[in-house]
Length: 135
Image 1 (tube, rainbow, N blue to C red):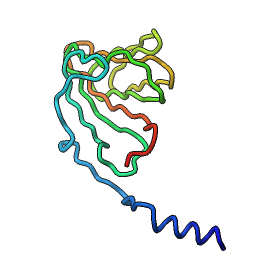
Image 2: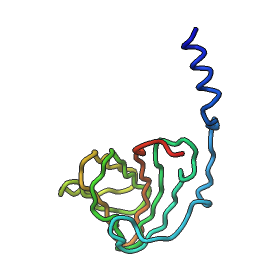
Image 3: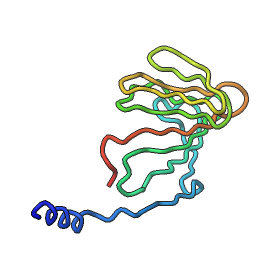
């Protein structure tokens, strides 16, 4: 009974999280240099920014010709999924070519990056967990 009362009290004081958040990516679009080295230019859609209580990041980024997300260590697992274009992904010194429909699953502790290749921009979805839930 005490546990039930404590659970009810916690539910009443916890901030309400909506059952769903619908995001229009056009509201989250901006042109900026890519992270981790500012190599070239990109268009970024920080899709989940501002979502209350989120535990993951979900982003879209298009690397313009010659652009790259520079090599950097990650402290979480991360996924790069290619929508269009061609890219070269690096993880701990190993490289692989990614084309549309391919994903690279990158592991916590690795040193990773991705570079656009060819004539077409490289369009990606990038997703990873947050260290702690967003407020």
